[in-house]
Length: 374
Ligand SMILES: Cc1cc2nc3c(=O)[nH]c(=O)nc-3n(C[C@H](O)[C@H](O)[C@H](O)COP(=O)(O)OP(=O)(O)OC[C@H]3O[C@@H](n4cnc5c(N)ncnc54)[C@H](O)[C@@H]3O)c2cc1C
Image 1: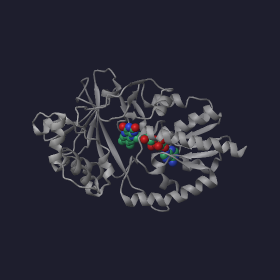
Image 2 (image 1 turned 90 degrees about the vertical axis):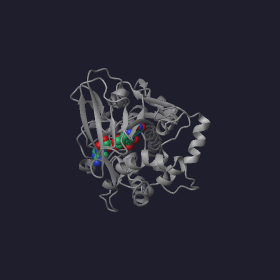
Image 3 (image 1 turned 135 degrees about the vertical axis):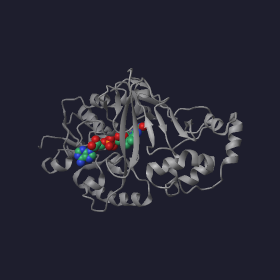
Image 4 (image 1 turned 120 degrees about the vertical axis):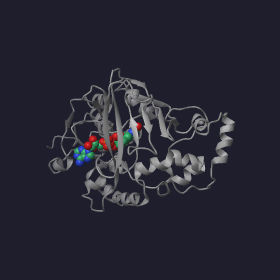
């Protein structure tokens, strides 16, 4: 098993990106290991028994402002436009979300120009000079009534933590728009891989220098492999160190996929349910994939505290615990050339474009090791 230049734990976006660069650029032999039975990490998509393409780990809306990342991925996929529109169901009606002028007009039953909307929200908001948490952030931006209708219940369901106890940045990520733009996000590139994420990642790692080992836990094989150059670890950091400083908490999700015998079930890809039902949102990814079929699948998402690790829990005590792991990470890297990258390994909320950027930076560092070894 001394055959590899580089061993990568995790065939998600980070693992596939570094494998691609190392094999193509450096001509290294790469072993890519994943404990799941597929590549693509949480971006994985596959065909449901009904024939409809679904996103297996929640909807993935690819968006970025980074042209370098967009150009890099464009080598492995064609794109279709990202049809990313979200509505929120509250008080028995569907509203555009994030909040824009149309949301305000519908909610308050009035017509608003841009100037009117700005003045109107100015009267609604509760001025807080330095919002210390997510609740203060939102009421400072839009006032208590909109906060209670759109944010409070959703945050409680999603995190089981009151917005008062969550960092301001959690709800701060969601824009409020003084125009009628009803797209979910503001990024320059909002696209989706034409043939799906899994196909895009397959194209990346389609190289005879890369061997993929699925259904394999890195823990089980790590003592029997010693790569010539380095190891990239994209699994959970606390698990790697046998939880010796404590366990980092994650939020997880259950997905209940339901089939409907009609081309579309809902008006857009995602509907949030801040105040009704146990599920947080329903997702009909066909609105994004553009697949033509007489039937459709809607995923009902339920948030929970145990299960597959999906979202790091943004509380100070968890970030402090992660910082203590950083010392251990630094020694692994300096003594053994083991690099910790990605969402699980750095306990950070990253979108796909951001982790790919991190992966490319890590590859640059690793490629320099070759020079020092020669
Ligand atoms: C519900 C949800 C929705 C999201 N929506 C979006 C979105 O709309 N847009 C967007 O840009 N991003 C989105 N993301 C983020 C995106 O999924 C991540 O940024 C990306 O998948 C992170 O890539 P990664 O390689 O770091 O980790 P992952 O995708 O988590 O891949 C890590 C891989 O490592 C494997 N692994 C872990 N431990 C081991 C081990 N011990 N041995 C072997 N293998 C192991 C895992 O099985 C996994 O396949 C979403 C994430 C979630 C959870």
